[in-house]
Image 1: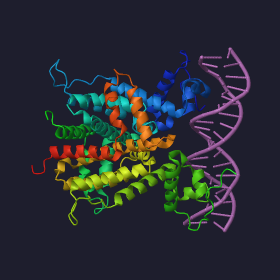
Image 2: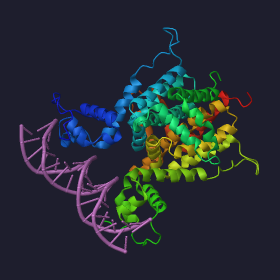
Image 3: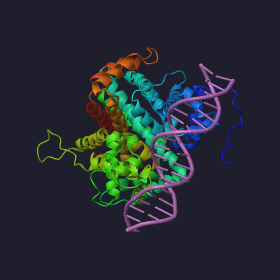
Image 4: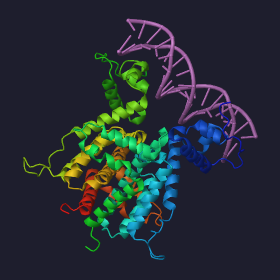
Length: 240
Length: 240
DNA sequence: ACCTGAACACCGTTCAAGT
DNA sequence: ACCTGAACACCGTTCAAGT
């Protein structure tokens, strides 16, 4: 009686690595990191564990593949033209960096498991294939920005690190609603909790708690990007 | 024959939450994230699982406590005075921020499991007690920097995100030696791998691969911090 | 109040056997 | 070459029983 979910659609296509990864992503989206098990996968694909292991090394590799797929999709989207730019006029590198960053931000927002997974994945196989993808996408625009070659690595890394850190934290906020609260209630509860902190140890945090309340994630994220971009411009003036 | 490790020192102190968390940290340091199991913990503490569950809710909570302990210790260290500052002269807020950042960087370097754990922990209980600690420590200095109140939240968050993102990625590099290679060999191998990437899809990454080779993690990390700090200063000029 | 340790449910992975 | 499904080792967690 317990488990009859979804074996309905008989398997028509043969199993393949792609289909397995696709199912893994769906499962992760629907049930979170804890929901991806070989048993759940096995049922969703109407097959046995052995079949999956024929196409995939192990669970780590499967998680890595899921991560890569989603990141690749996020980066494949052509950076959308800024709404106020005249038709035909190319975006500035600065706008393009914003767009790439926002694409990653949104991917993590849609697939909250990505945040944890990126950290884990990057730390298991640091420069697997996810990092170079992001790195390349940002780096081309850093170069277009006029940053001198000697600083390409540092500058691009800094951008990437900010993006991953911020988007991750944000996925956390977005998902926190899982407890049944919606986002506003959650931010409200957090702000309230901050205001309860020890006045000596947490003077600053208490003082900014109110800024937590109405804040817009996307706006904040972009403000941070702008801070970094401004730092880049100030450190490497365009015509030095 | 298999498992006789370390039951030698008979348990003298009673079990306590503190001792359990301490043992968990040791286990994580010695054997990585995968090495922390209730069975290993049980043996190290010469007790049974039930005893541990008396002091600790579950494994997640234990991991959270381990994370909090290590982060608290990292932040408790008084920021070291810059070596060139005259004795008695207080450090600038900028130097203090650098020092706090470096403290976290080094904590993650010493406890590589922290990188993944911070992402997981922050995303499970986003504003548990780790984030406010870091936030407070940075925020006080941001305030001292002269940033206007309306921007405290954004600016402090941006710093925190960069630090967590960069330190995490770096822990990955440091740990990558696990495969038997040392750090230089690893960076070398990575650079080589980058140079093999597709010339069309990865033109930029290939072009910076050589910068990967000799780079100093700490130096790079601080260069990124400086970029953000410069951005902050440019966005919020000291005497506006 | 604190601890013991057997037991349970679940999970990743393997492998002999099938087609 | 690709898939099946029973079986194995291991893990987090529970709980009746002890002190």
